[in-house]
Amino acid sequence: MCFKLDEDKERGLYTLYNNKGVYIKVLKSGAELIGLKFINSSDGLLYRDSDTGIPAEGWKNHATVLFPVVGRLKNSISKYNNKIIKFTKNHGLARYTEFKPVKYRLKKENASILLEMKSDNETKESYPFDFKFSIMYKIYNKKLKVIFRVKNLSKEEPLFFSLGWHPGFAVKGKWNLLVKSNIFNYYEVADNGLLTGKMSRINKDYFYKLIKSDLKKAVVLGIDDKKKRKIEFNNGKENIILKFQDFEFLGIWSEDSNKFICIEPWQGTDDFVEQKNFNEKLGIVNLKPGAEKKFKVTVKIK
Image (cartoon, rainbow, N blue to C red):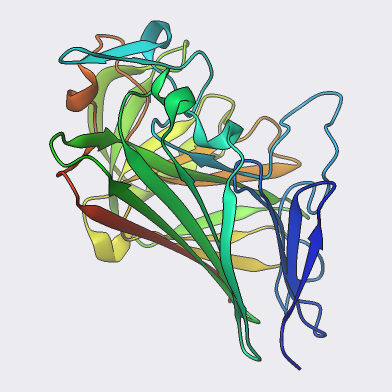
Protein backbone atom coordinates (compact mmCIF):
# COMPACT_ATOMS: atom_id res chain seq x y z
CA MET A 1 0.00 0.00 0.00
CA CYS A 2 1.31 3.44 -0.95
CA PHE A 3 1.66 6.33 1.41
CA LYS A 4 -1.29 8.71 1.48
CA LEU A 5 -1.68 12.45 2.00
CA ASP A 6 -4.30 14.22 4.08
CA GLU A 7 -4.68 18.01 3.97
CA ASP A 8 -6.35 19.93 6.78
CA LYS A 9 -6.98 23.30 5.11
CA GLU A 10 -8.33 24.93 8.25
CA ARG A 11 -5.13 24.31 10.19
CA GLY A 12 -2.77 24.37 7.21
CA LEU A 13 -1.60 20.86 8.09
CA TYR A 14 -0.33 18.09 5.82
CA THR A 15 -0.12 14.47 6.99
CA LEU A 16 1.78 11.82 5.03
CA TYR A 17 1.11 8.33 6.36
CA ASN A 18 0.80 4.62 5.58
CA ASN A 19 -1.15 1.67 6.95
CA LYS A 20 1.81 0.62 9.15
CA GLY A 21 1.31 3.60 11.45
CA VAL A 22 4.16 5.65 10.01
CA TYR A 23 3.52 9.39 9.59
CA ILE A 24 4.87 12.89 9.40
CA LYS A 25 2.77 16.00 9.99
CA VAL A 26 3.89 19.33 8.57
CA LEU A 27 2.42 22.80 9.02
CA LYS A 28 2.50 25.44 6.30
CA SER A 29 3.24 27.88 9.11
CA GLY A 30 7.01 27.84 9.47
CA ALA A 31 7.16 24.58 7.44
CA GLU A 32 7.33 23.00 10.88
CA LEU A 33 7.33 19.26 11.43
CA ILE A 34 4.91 18.67 14.30
CA GLY A 35 4.45 14.89 14.14
CA LEU A 36 6.81 11.99 13.49
CA LYS A 37 6.30 8.26 13.92
CA PHE A 38 8.28 5.35 12.53
CA ILE A 39 7.25 1.74 12.19
CA ASN A 40 9.31 0.78 15.27
CA SER A 41 8.33 3.67 17.54
CA SER A 42 5.76 3.13 20.27
CA ASP A 43 4.09 6.47 19.51
CA GLY A 44 4.99 9.94 18.23
CA LEU A 45 8.63 10.93 18.73
CA LEU A 46 8.29 14.70 19.02
CA TYR A 47 7.39 16.74 22.06
CA ARG A 48 3.59 17.27 22.07
CA ASP A 49 3.58 15.15 18.93
CA SER A 50 0.72 16.08 16.53
CA ASP A 51 -0.66 18.72 18.93
CA THR A 52 -1.57 21.88 17.02
CA GLY A 53 -2.77 23.71 20.12
CA ILE A 54 -0.82 26.40 21.95
CA PRO A 55 0.13 25.39 25.49
CA ALA A 56 -0.59 27.81 28.32
CA GLU A 57 3.06 27.71 29.37
CA GLY A 58 6.36 26.22 28.30
CA TRP A 59 7.94 25.70 24.89
CA LYS A 60 5.30 26.06 22.20
CA ASN A 61 7.03 24.42 19.24
CA HIS A 62 7.91 20.95 17.97
CA ALA A 63 10.73 21.25 15.41
CA THR A 64 11.41 24.89 14.60
CA VAL A 65 13.19 25.93 11.40
CA LEU A 66 15.89 28.56 12.01
CA PHE A 67 16.62 30.91 9.12
CA PRO A 68 18.38 33.27 8.32
CA VAL A 69 19.78 33.52 11.85
CA VAL A 70 20.35 30.95 14.55
CA GLY A 71 19.60 32.19 18.04
CA ARG A 72 19.53 35.92 18.52
CA LEU A 73 21.17 39.09 17.36
CA LYS A 74 22.68 41.38 19.98
CA ASN A 75 20.16 44.16 20.64
CA SER A 76 18.04 42.58 17.86
CA ILE A 77 20.08 44.21 15.10
CA SER A 78 23.10 43.55 12.88
CA LYS A 79 24.80 45.20 9.90
CA TYR A 80 26.45 44.29 6.62
CA ASN A 81 27.76 47.18 4.48
CA ASN A 82 24.72 49.44 4.06
CA LYS A 83 22.23 46.70 5.02
CA ILE A 84 20.45 46.52 8.37
CA ILE A 85 19.27 43.12 9.61
CA LYS A 86 16.65 43.28 12.40
CA PHE A 87 14.99 40.47 14.33
CA THR A 88 13.34 41.17 17.66
CA LYS A 89 12.69 37.44 18.24
CA ASN A 90 14.99 34.45 18.13
CA HIS A 91 15.85 32.41 15.03
CA GLY A 92 14.92 34.77 12.22
CA LEU A 93 11.84 34.87 10.01
CA ALA A 94 11.17 31.41 8.54
CA ARG A 95 9.42 30.19 11.69
CA TYR A 96 6.84 33.00 11.34
CA THR A 97 6.30 32.64 7.59
CA GLU A 98 3.64 30.60 5.82
CA PHE A 99 5.40 28.36 3.32
CA LYS A 100 3.90 27.38 0.00
CA PRO A 101 3.54 23.64 -0.67
CA VAL A 102 5.22 23.07 -4.03
CA LYS A 103 4.80 19.34 -4.62
CA TYR A 104 4.44 15.99 -2.97
CA ARG A 105 5.16 12.40 -3.97
CA LEU A 106 3.46 9.29 -2.66
CA LYS A 107 5.09 5.91 -3.22
CA LYS A 108 4.96 2.48 -1.64
CA GLU A 109 8.27 2.79 0.22
CA ASN A 110 8.39 6.54 0.90
CA ALA A 111 6.60 9.85 0.57
CA SER A 112 7.79 13.44 0.45
CA ILE A 113 6.49 16.99 0.58
CA LEU A 114 8.35 20.10 -0.58
CA LEU A 115 7.57 23.58 0.78
CA GLU A 116 9.20 26.91 -0.01
CA MET A 117 9.27 30.61 0.74
CA LYS A 118 10.77 33.49 -1.21
CA SER A 119 11.91 36.94 -0.27
CA ASP A 120 9.42 39.76 -0.74
CA ASN A 121 8.89 43.31 0.46
CA GLU A 122 7.85 42.08 3.89
CA THR A 123 10.88 39.84 4.47
CA LYS A 124 13.21 42.59 3.24
CA GLU A 125 12.07 44.86 6.06
CA SER A 126 14.05 42.65 8.44
CA TYR A 127 16.39 40.78 6.09
CA PRO A 128 17.22 42.80 2.95
CA PHE A 129 18.37 39.97 0.68
CA ASP A 130 16.88 38.15 -2.32
CA PHE A 131 16.54 34.41 -1.71
CA LYS A 132 14.49 31.25 -2.08
CA PHE A 133 14.37 28.82 0.84
CA SER A 134 12.87 25.35 0.51
CA ILE A 135 12.44 22.34 2.79
CA MET A 136 11.70 18.79 1.76
CA TYR A 137 10.56 16.16 4.27
CA LYS A 138 10.90 12.58 3.01
CA ILE A 139 9.51 9.79 5.19
CA TYR A 140 10.33 6.07 5.02
CA ASN A 141 9.21 3.31 7.39
CA LYS A 142 12.25 3.77 9.62
CA LYS A 143 13.87 7.00 8.45
CA LEU A 144 13.23 10.69 7.79
CA LYS A 145 15.29 12.89 5.49
CA VAL A 146 15.06 16.66 5.87
CA ILE A 147 16.65 18.59 3.02
CA PHE A 148 17.05 22.37 3.20
CA ARG A 149 17.97 24.37 0.12
CA VAL A 150 18.89 28.05 0.02
CA LYS A 151 19.26 29.88 -3.29
CA ASN A 152 20.64 33.37 -3.80
CA LEU A 153 18.27 35.06 -6.24
CA SER A 154 20.48 38.12 -6.62
CA LYS A 155 22.67 38.39 -9.70
CA GLU A 156 24.98 40.90 -8.03
CA GLU A 157 25.19 40.49 -4.25
CA PRO A 158 26.28 37.62 -2.01
CA LEU A 159 23.71 36.13 0.36
CA PHE A 160 24.73 35.76 3.99
CA PHE A 161 22.67 33.46 6.21
CA SER A 162 22.68 30.95 9.04
CA LEU A 163 20.47 27.88 9.15
CA GLY A 164 19.36 25.43 11.80
CA TRP A 165 16.80 22.83 12.77
CA HIS A 166 15.37 22.72 16.30
CA PRO A 167 13.50 19.41 16.85
CA GLY A 168 12.36 18.63 20.39
CA PHE A 169 12.21 14.89 21.06
CA ALA A 170 9.84 13.58 23.71
CA VAL A 171 11.39 12.02 26.81
CA LYS A 172 9.66 8.71 27.65
CA GLY A 173 11.85 7.50 30.50
CA LYS A 174 15.46 7.78 31.60
CA TRP A 175 17.18 9.40 28.65
CA ASN A 176 20.75 9.46 27.36
CA LEU A 177 22.78 10.90 24.49
CA LEU A 178 25.61 9.07 22.76
CA VAL A 179 28.04 10.79 20.41
CA LYS A 180 30.52 9.60 17.82
CA SER A 181 32.99 12.46 18.12
CA ASN A 182 35.68 12.29 20.80
CA ILE A 183 36.58 15.99 20.72
CA PHE A 184 34.30 19.04 20.49
CA ASN A 185 34.68 22.79 20.27
CA TYR A 186 32.73 24.10 23.26
CA TYR A 187 31.44 27.67 23.01
CA GLU A 188 30.72 29.37 26.30
CA VAL A 189 27.27 30.97 26.54
CA ALA A 190 26.65 34.09 28.62
CA ASP A 191 23.61 34.49 30.86
CA ASN A 192 21.92 36.59 28.16
CA GLY A 193 22.23 33.73 25.64
CA LEU A 194 24.99 35.33 23.54
CA LEU A 195 28.39 33.69 23.08
CA THR A 196 31.12 35.08 25.34
CA GLY A 197 33.80 34.55 22.69
CA LYS A 198 35.54 31.83 24.71
CA MET A 199 36.00 28.48 22.98
CA SER A 200 37.66 25.40 24.46
CA ARG A 201 38.34 21.89 23.24
CA ILE A 202 36.51 19.31 25.32
CA ASN A 203 36.44 15.52 25.31
CA LYS A 204 33.54 13.11 25.31
CA ASP A 205 33.55 12.75 29.12
CA TYR A 206 33.11 16.49 29.58
CA PHE A 207 30.32 16.45 27.01
CA TYR A 208 28.39 13.94 29.12
CA LYS A 209 28.79 16.16 32.19
CA LEU A 210 27.44 19.14 30.26
CA ILE A 211 24.28 17.44 29.02
CA LYS A 212 23.37 16.30 32.52
CA SER A 213 23.56 19.88 33.78
CA ASP A 214 20.88 22.55 33.48
CA LEU A 215 20.05 22.69 29.77
CA LYS A 216 17.99 25.88 30.00
CA LYS A 217 21.12 27.61 28.79
CA ALA A 218 21.98 25.86 25.55
CA VAL A 219 25.10 23.74 25.20
CA VAL A 220 26.77 24.97 21.98
CA LEU A 221 29.27 22.67 20.31
CA GLY A 222 31.29 22.55 17.11
CA ILE A 223 32.30 19.32 15.39
CA ASP A 224 35.12 19.69 12.86
CA ASP A 225 35.04 16.18 11.41
CA LYS A 226 32.00 15.76 9.13
CA LYS A 227 32.07 11.99 9.61
CA LYS A 228 31.59 12.47 13.37
CA ARG A 229 28.47 14.67 13.08
CA LYS A 230 26.15 12.06 14.48
CA ILE A 231 24.26 11.71 17.76
CA GLU A 232 22.08 8.99 19.25
CA PHE A 233 19.28 9.85 21.64
CA ASN A 234 17.76 7.15 23.81
CA ASN A 235 14.46 8.66 24.96
CA GLY A 236 13.73 5.89 27.44
CA LYS A 237 12.03 3.68 24.86
CA GLU A 238 13.63 4.19 21.45
CA ASN A 239 17.10 4.91 20.09
CA ILE A 240 16.86 7.86 17.71
CA ILE A 241 19.87 8.62 15.51
CA LEU A 242 20.51 12.03 13.92
CA LYS A 243 23.12 12.55 11.21
CA PHE A 244 23.92 16.14 10.26
CA GLN A 245 27.10 16.17 8.18
CA ASP A 246 26.28 19.50 6.52
CA PHE A 247 26.01 21.35 9.85
CA GLU A 248 29.15 22.43 11.67
CA PHE A 249 27.52 23.17 15.03
CA LEU A 250 25.20 21.41 17.44
CA GLY A 251 22.96 22.97 20.08
CA ILE A 252 21.43 20.98 22.92
CA TRP A 253 18.70 22.65 24.95
CA SER A 254 15.68 21.90 27.08
CA GLU A 255 13.29 23.94 29.15
CA ASP A 256 12.35 20.75 31.02
CA SER A 257 14.58 17.72 30.44
CA ASN A 258 11.98 15.46 32.02
CA LYS A 259 9.69 16.22 29.07
CA PHE A 260 11.86 16.84 25.99
CA ILE A 261 15.39 17.31 24.67
CA CYS A 262 16.12 19.55 21.71
CA ILE A 263 18.97 18.31 19.49
CA GLU A 264 19.72 21.09 17.03
CA PRO A 265 22.02 20.94 13.99
CA TRP A 266 23.20 24.47 13.25
CA GLN A 267 25.18 26.23 10.58
CA GLY A 268 25.79 29.43 12.48
CA THR A 269 25.28 30.51 16.08
CA ASP A 270 24.06 33.35 18.28
CA ASP A 271 25.97 36.62 18.19
CA PHE A 272 29.02 37.16 20.36
CA VAL A 273 28.78 39.53 23.31
CA GLU A 274 31.30 41.60 21.36
CA GLN A 275 29.24 41.69 18.19
CA LYS A 276 30.73 41.27 14.74
CA ASN A 277 29.19 42.39 11.46
CA PHE A 278 26.55 40.06 10.00
CA ASN A 279 28.90 38.72 7.31
CA GLU A 280 31.49 37.90 10.01
CA LYS A 281 29.21 35.90 12.34
CA LEU A 282 30.49 32.52 13.47
CA GLY A 283 29.48 29.88 10.93
CA ILE A 284 27.79 32.33 8.55
CA VAL A 285 27.29 31.02 4.98
CA ASN A 286 28.42 33.22 2.11
CA LEU A 287 26.45 32.23 -0.99
CA LYS A 288 27.56 33.71 -4.30
CA PRO A 289 25.07 35.41 -6.65
CA GLY A 290 22.85 32.81 -8.33
CA ALA A 291 24.29 29.94 -6.26
CA GLU A 292 22.35 27.33 -4.28
CA LYS A 293 23.40 25.27 -1.26
CA LYS A 294 21.87 22.10 0.21
CA PHE A 295 21.87 20.90 3.82
CA LYS A 296 20.61 17.50 4.95
CA VAL A 297 19.60 15.93 8.27
CA THR A 298 18.67 12.26 8.62
CA VAL A 299 16.63 10.90 11.53
CA LYS A 300 16.14 7.19 12.02
CA ILE A 301 15.42 4.56 14.66
CA LYS A 302 18.04 1.99 15.49
